[in-house]
Image (cartoon, rainbow, N blue to C red; front, side, top):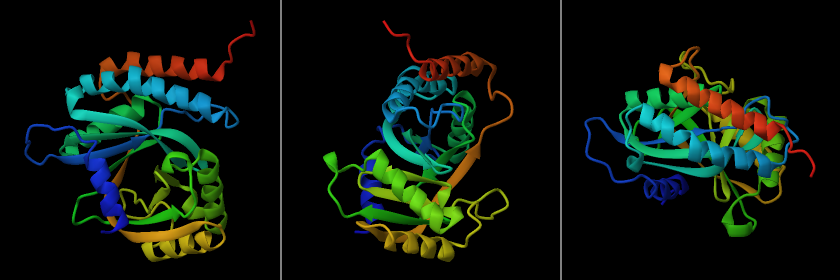
Length: 255
């Protein structure tokens, strides 16, 4: 069984049972809670605490605001990269149609002050987004990449080809790179799928323990942050998230 297919099976276990809805499929949303104004040298553990608090205190309220049953969504902590920076990230599995999933993504992007939220249907048979999986043939605690190791490969890949520094999502010991496209159909990386994969292959060749495990196509899209609140009731949630970010940026006074 292909590696991505095995990862999909694991992700499918996260999707709670939900009533059958027309056009509804298992959607996977990937997003961060760390904003651009959080210092890059802030310890990873502090950024993870911010992400966990956003997951526990804010994300459920965004779901309720969108009329989505909390029992029908599961949000877990992961690791991901965006614009050459590795951060804790969140992965939400929920059964929705494309329209509701995109609206939820827009709400999360606005509340959490993110440039965009990634939405993917990994089970789609007609995906138009090229992907590549990079697996690390070394042992990690719990079978999961460390932030340092993932960041070092992320930067190494971006050094080989600038277009590889856009982003990734980690699954255990594997990094998923998607050659995402804009509304005009052009890849954000500036690379064709073939060139995207070839560049990752060159990056892997320079990085001990890394292997290009699989390539293919998936159904994935970026939903950008809207300029205005999708719903007026989301404003207090955005303010709450801003307060959490401020707490994270401001160290507690010594006692």
